[in-house]
Amino acid sequence: MVSDSGCSVLPELFWSSVDVWVNKPHVVNKRLCGATVAENEGLLPGDAQLSAEEWTFITGEGSPPLALLRNQPPWNSSVRTLVPKVNCYGTNSHKDLILKVTFLPFEEDSEGKVTFKTSNIYQIQLCRKGSEEWALELHVFTPDSWFSDGVAYAKLPWLSSNLLPKLMRWACEYTSSEFRSTLSLLPVDKYSLTYQQLKEKYKAMVKVWPEVTDPEKFVYEDVAIATYLLVLWAEERVENNLTARQSFVDLGCGNGLLVHILTNEGHPGKGLDVRRRRIWDMYGPQTLLEEKAITPSESFLFPDTDWLIGNHSDELTPWIPVIAARSSPSCRYFVLPCCFFDFYGKYQRRQCKKSQYREYIDFITEVSQASGFNTDEDCLRIPSTKRVCLVGKSRNYRLFEETEAERRRARYVLSRQPAPGVAVQRSDLGNDEDGRHGNSDIDSAWGAGFQPRDKVETVRNCATLPRDLVDSVVLQVAKRLLGMTEGDDRGARGVWNPGGSLSVSEVAGLLEQETLQQLKKECGGLQTLLKNSHQVFRVEGGRVYIRDWRDRQSSKAQDKRKFIDPGALKTRRCWFHSHHPQGCPLQVKHCTFAHGENDLRPSTRPLKKLKSASLE
Image 1 (cartoon, rainbow, N blue to C red):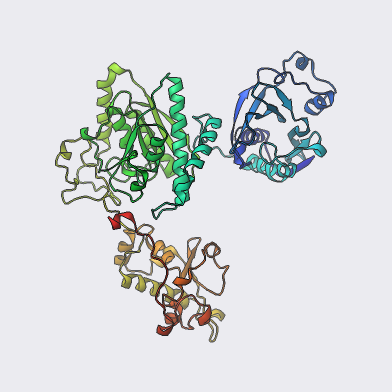
Image 2: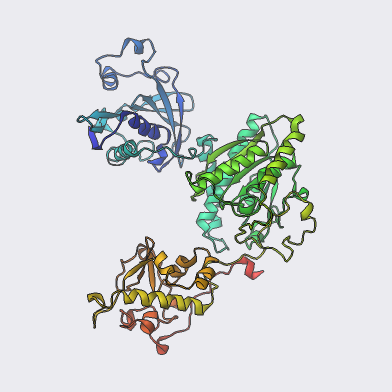
């Protein structure tokens, strides 16, 4: 028996924490993709039998209750099928018969033959330790004969040192999520199998990725999204007795990898984006990608397309349900919202009681329902903080009501237009002189006022700010930080002065209003400029410090820095050597920056890849 205690656990919260372990074992066991849980119709699967000792462990009684002998258990039971991330069991299924808080593992082969792993029977019990104190205990039937393979059968020490504390924490700190569970609309086993196949098939893309974006994140994220759509569409074909694979159009397709995968897997379709990417040429002619600005109008309807896709489609996101609804009565859609856009500009928050993300998902759901869709919400398993998708598979009205549905649609879109004279925040959306990207018909379109983003991507990470401006801000902030410690031991004569610290808001108070306005136009503003000045500052927890290069552990980010390319050494001047009252804290041979003109070297490091927009 192993126990874990330390907080007041209410019994109802205990059941909530156990429910997480039953339905979402992958949250703790990272070698699992998930689990499927079904009610158990009988007592034991197949012809399996348990001994009297085993029944005693399960029930606490010397023999099975009479109800059990009649195959009528006095408590509910369920069967959990574990789905590993990588299938290492062939056609055998690994399952748990769950009787209240007792887990009876068993294996089932392709012919339905059941074999119990009685050596791995265990219980999770909530025990009272005082008037208000409870403890969780792990009871194992035969700990000496416990079997482990590290996947379906976890190691016994892992259950006590990992699972039990997690259950205790969940029971003490349980909060319901504002979003759905991951993959709630799909069979997890089919998703896991398809994902492993696609991951193996397209993993080579990571090595040849020509874009400046992180290849592992973007490749495996698009593989996961493609997996989701392929399984969703396969289930739809079975449900509706369809044989032809669904067609699609990806609006705002970006790098086009999702289009490439879906096309390779047999689905006819294409991708549209305002800006061509360098990687498009690598896919071959079978992957149809078009460079085109999309303006919501009659010119951009897709009557012969089954599904419209919006994968991080930004300003197009709220329009996709509308475009799908107006394309044809059978057109469906999938959107994965990311940046917060309304129909005609940035989305403005209205409810402070919700998170901004939750409020925006609710807004797109509202758009979907107003467009005439029954809307499903799900959560993808991707390496991103924005993982909630919305799916519109069916309409909430009958076909002969299309005229009235279109009136509701039009009224809703019109209601989102800003009032005359009200400025709309456009973010980085570009426009021609007439604000219409050369489309003379936009005023008569139902998307009048919509502005697609500029063809050339605007760089707004402070990298293009005037050098004089950046140097001036850095020097002004550094002098203020150093001045904070001039009168104490840290700034004493002969001792290198590390300076004090200021919050980012306090730093902003040092700068002129004109400078702040210029920085506000950049992503991240002042904080981005300070972080970009990595040689001089470190920014942690919203506070700014002078970087002390003698202290290699002074920053968490410092620990994660990559090895410095020898070709980059001594290619930039040392700020401290030039501006700090005591100079650089490091000797010349130890500093990666140049101490004076004679120490400066030409760079021999290969040039960084430029963004595709600047090469075309």
